[in-house]
Length: 178
Image (cartoon, rainbow, N blue to C red; front, side, top):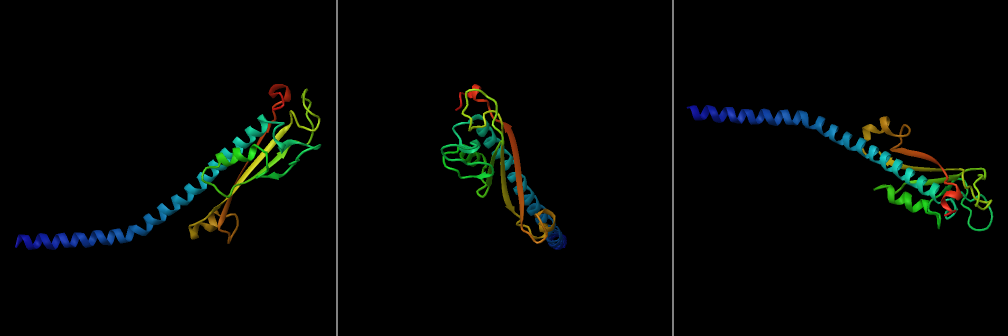
């Protein structure tokens, strides 16, 4: 008789556990998927910031070998608002190496608008001006009910993450123009 009661009790506990799991599983699923979405956005933010910083560092350290800050004269002029890829521009590979798993990041390079006063530099270059590198990426929102909270606008399914870094260009007297 005792064995029969224990079997009934064990079956009842199993059914109760299944019911509790069925009630809590959707809540846990929403939490896990929401955390994954936020993680994707945070990852993009860190990657974009790192890529912009590394691109601006390369841009500030190579004022003559890159066409990114050339104001005019012979050769390729990238100019304000240039986007990657730009041939011969060391900023674009630096950004590409630092962007991590992001494959759709857009890069814009903007040189200073006035020629600096550093000696030993060609007058067409911005030897001690500023350079700005902007990197942005569109992160897809893969959780439909989070579109209204995280997307750029209502009905959109992407969140644009963008970082702008401005650095002073190394004077040509310090870098010998390279």
